[in-house]
Length: 193
Image (spheres, rainbow, N blue to C red):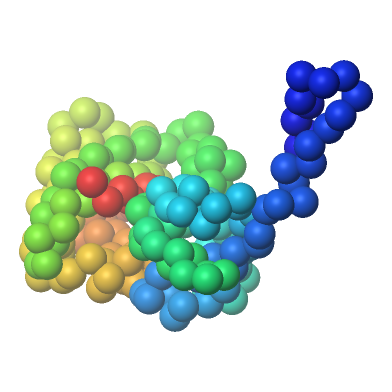
């Protein structure tokens, strides 16, 4: 980035003044190095939100289909610490899962965790065959009530770990399959409010 001054021909190179900060993952993911970011002043990086593929955070290629969002909260000399803001399943993955003769059931729930953190959890249920509206409503109500019950018993970090390990999705799938055969259950997005 080059800025021109009023004098013709003179230039000021602001890129040379920038320092590189290493961005650390939240404690939930083990303080791994996520990325590096440039900044003229380290205080300018506070509040930045980064999207990072989950496979890079966990080191497990199975998590390639989702990404997490982290927010830089504080900076030390050359390090920036972050906190978890949310996660999202890649849009291509959701589009690939939805098929023509199946039904898509979305549920959006604002829940309070055990440690009193407000989160928005967006669930996606896909049935094996197309279903009518009454069955969709039953499945949506069941998924919402289970998400509320799970959130009451866990704190924010436990919920994050359970979602990334597909434990909550398995619980929802088992419960919803008692109403109608389920193809898959996905928590497609979470946000810390």
